[in-house]
Image (cartoon, each protein chain N blue to C red):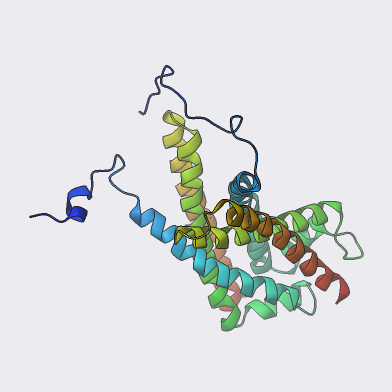
Length: 125
Length: 136
């Protein structure tokens, strides 16, 4: 005896996708919370000069949500751009673009996290 | 690689259907998402890196978007309003998608109403955001 779920599991042409779909939704939820935090925090800044914003981001209460925002948003758009590439690119260009997408996300995300930590840990600029 | 047989029939596409707000909102979701993922993410990381790099690098970043008086220049307004409008549109239509995922809101009239509401909400929220900044 096999359950209905057991019979269809792995039979789709892609053999995967649930993980992609679910993490897109999961990060959509965390993006919503974190982006609303950032928008409100930015709007409420007394000033937008270097000293104000640098001091602001040195707080753990800013650096941690900011790093979480980068992780959540970058994971989300990595999944989203993958779908866009898969929809419009059908030849070798698809593989090339998907590889470039991974490099783009990791390189940019690492730079962002490094910048946040550098400010938070108070290294001399 | 996935090669395409051009003789295969194509499914009816955009030019076949009568346009409705749900189609525009769907396209906007993809366009705003792709725009923010490329232009938006690069600018966000440039902002963070400039802030981490010190006062001088931050002044370089600021100089691109502001005039000498500190107000936003034309480019700053286009990027600022463009990114916030994209963010709010993507956010509102994303919330709509989460509701549609539950199987709710597919009745024609409800679907059309909420598709239009995402655009009304995104324009309103963008206006509120910038009016708040302007009135501070």
